[in-house]
Length: 323
Image (cartoon, rainbow, N blue to C red; front, side):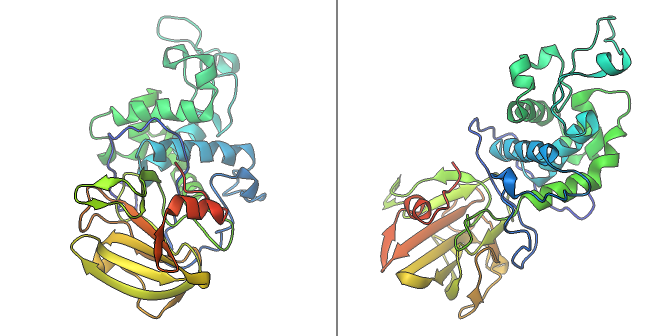
């Protein structure tokens, strides 16, 4: 993918049919926009992002959500936003080129384009094309079927899906799409606690794993090197590496709570023992080290020295881990 200064690896082709919410933060400091939550459009800035606001941002959130739940990372999310910006101005409209310009298909029939991506009848039902999440999933499904789309100019990759007259049409929207994706994808939480990584639950507490029991919850979105955030304010009590957990971090919080973050490269651990951290501060990067089969965060919680189910614990503090 020829984005400027992106450098992220996309692990495309892993299609997951559930739709949830995942999160992204590029800064190693706590995000100033950490009150903005992808799952809650009411938290989106009223002033907009690069001129895109209101329902446009809500539609952008649905596109990001769909991409992440298809295990497609930041590059694909940006491509999806670019496509919708170029096709509909990020508006879920009930009309298209036939109504506005009298354009026809090659066989002379009126175009039937509707929705965020201006999808015609052969894409699916009107209901699906007018559902932002389903429309986005259909777009990403076809994008993922384009050989080598990751290595194309973003606008050219979109053109291979949309088949419009100008393969460079969508390039005008690249910088805006980057701004929207990055702004909407910060850590999501209730203030004192936040979801510690982007992705949905890919492994559950108590699951049997060969000769041991899975003592945490896994979060993954199909990409490597995504940010890991401190789930709550506390003090780093340990950083290190072992064969099972790879590079990992333990943080002590109030009320006897300790959280653990596993499978990082040692070089991607961004904090040190004794360091005070805030909720939402980046402490590392998602990896695949140790006993791991794909990049993900293995997240553990102990209360008074005993392991507890992270999903249950996080729901108790008002921040459900996305499924």
